[in-house]
Length: 221
Image 1: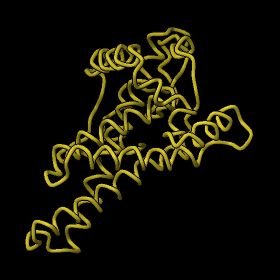
Image 2: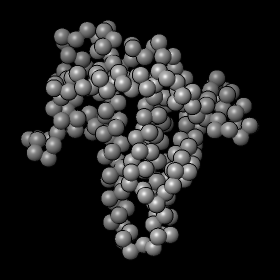
Image 3: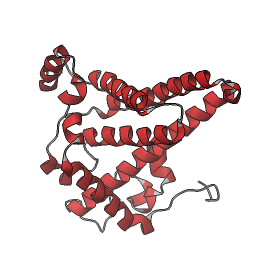
Image 4: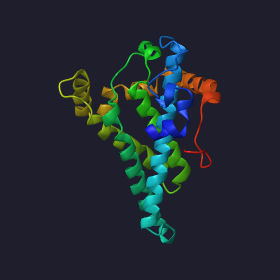
């Protein structure tokens, strides 16, 4: 995530290269400023996940001669790699700790709601698997995504909390209890989620001229 801030050049927007500090000429109370900060955090998540996915995939490719695998072996390899990547990415919830949230509170935040961040990570990784893992069908990809998400989110629920009550009730019914308990399933189907993602994209585009993304040719990058 922090590497994502650096590579995306967010120090061009923030004061003295510190991504937690806003520029002096910006009013921290303005909702536009907060949405922009959320957009930069969202981009840092995306870039950070891409870095991790590429590094892990390349590392494992060096350990096995995948090209010599049979079709059945390639299926098993992609399934194992998909579980490793998805499980690893979903462990970010242990740090982010998703909980139910109110959309009316979003404009005052500097970071996107944790639930939204986790949904975004899951969506991005799902798209990458669909594009690069041709031996895995849709059902397999969905099963891996939901199972990894359910296990990781379940580990963040505090005993005797309101989320835990919902978790226990849903678990007894054999449902995906954790993602329901913290509001992930509800947020996925909320039309406000798509609107929010559009806001983030528009805010990021508005400040793009200020950013200083790093490339292989960037001095001191």
